[in-house]
Length: 615
Ligand SMILES: Nc1ncnc2c1ncn2[C@@H]1O[C@H](COP(=O)(O)OP(=O)(O)OP(=O)(O)O)[C@@H](O)[C@H]1O
Image (cartoon, rainbow, N blue to C red; front, top):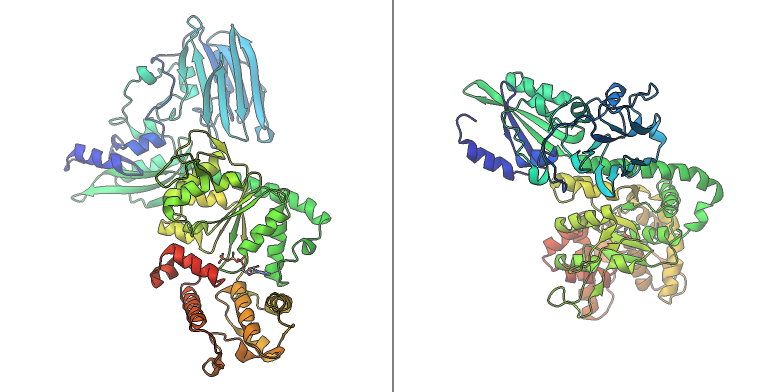
């Protein structure tokens, strides 16, 4: 910091997407970038404005705290005496809402010791002519203090201490809590004990952290490590999840040396609160599902409802159980499995067996829609939203799905910009048509599918981690056919008569050697490939028995000697084209994007061909 131009470093630090804090060897903050300020709430964007000041005798103080003693500056029942509340039964960890006059004995309050079991805690009262309505919502995780219908709402992840102070004479807001209160030294405890608070909005004073000691701004065991690293200790701390000031973050510490002397240390911070929140919701959804499972198993015979799914291997039995469970809930299902393993089939069955079965089922192949059109196809657009748009506007798939199911197939292929838009829509359960101003509600249940390893895609930076957690509520993995070879016999036995019937042939049978070859084959294209192989075999087999040489399996040793079938040049060309596409897909383990790039053909034409050849 001493040897480089500070302004230059500051400007540079403000544009990076992670929070970045640098302290010198005495713990004094030298640099604190904009992102760090926004993570810890130091950039104050709160709508309400008030002057700086202190809580004074007679001020009306309203406190709502979901867990006393946590993230409120270690507020205790003793501190509550400052607003006239003396109650021995209030304990640490209680959920508490109270209103009282500062340093007087006039107060009202409610509390609940076992807050884990609560959904909501309310206090609705008139207090010195003010309409006070407070609510702690433990499910949606917010605390709302309303004074004469003016709302002061803060959401939280684990714990929060919210406070609003009203001047009794003017009845105006003297102070309201906002995110970043720990960093600003504005915890409830500190303010009840006479500490000064800063102004907000129009009256906002610039709150500068530069020059302050790191311990004055942050509260976390991590800060000790950070400080020690700045002093010269050897500390290795990379990408660890830890809470700072009640905010879940991922941090790394970097000691900074210059000419063999420790200058200080840098702290890199990422805000993981959204991911934590999503994971928590997901865990809750899974708990609910497990509870339901116990009830459901007694009442329903799973095999009957899912007879369309052929396969009795252990892997497929597990899949059927999960499909059954998935159909009985509204949670987002994520179907995982290689190409052709039956993800689309499963998605349809989940819909057909659930309470939305009489509503639409909309299958969206995210990979086949050109990137530029994806948003308008999913969310729809208003009249004249862009050149080429229909004059009357258009409903998107989310709207078309109504109260039914929207199946987002190949979600791993979705471009990142669209992933952000989808995440926002799923989070808020609302969306806007392109060019539209009206907020529309997502009513459909969501099923997603991919043949990609999304965790791998996250590492590569092509898939958003937060979207992954949002959709990975109820994952169902469908194993590839080569891991459940036992199923091949049943699949052939059940599929072959249907294929013969569809193609108008008398029923054909498979010879034992041909069956053996089918079982030995690797099936890169899974059931879809098996269907194709059988269909081709039915077409080329003259008699009623399909022999091994009629299968044309790619590693079939008889391949070279296969009999030549006379057909049109076009049919031959089509067969070759299909073969090339299937081989390329095999090389890329079913990854369509890679295969398409290798073949150097356009996305739309590629998908047309997949459809044409039923690949
Ligand atoms: N277990 C099964 N029992 C019967 N038919 C199946 C089974 N699994 C898949 N199929 C059939 O195989 C074909 C391919 O399945 P599906 O289209 O559902 O695969 P997918 O996993 O969605 O493929 P992709 O990822 O390439 O879109 C379909 O005709 C489907 O009906």
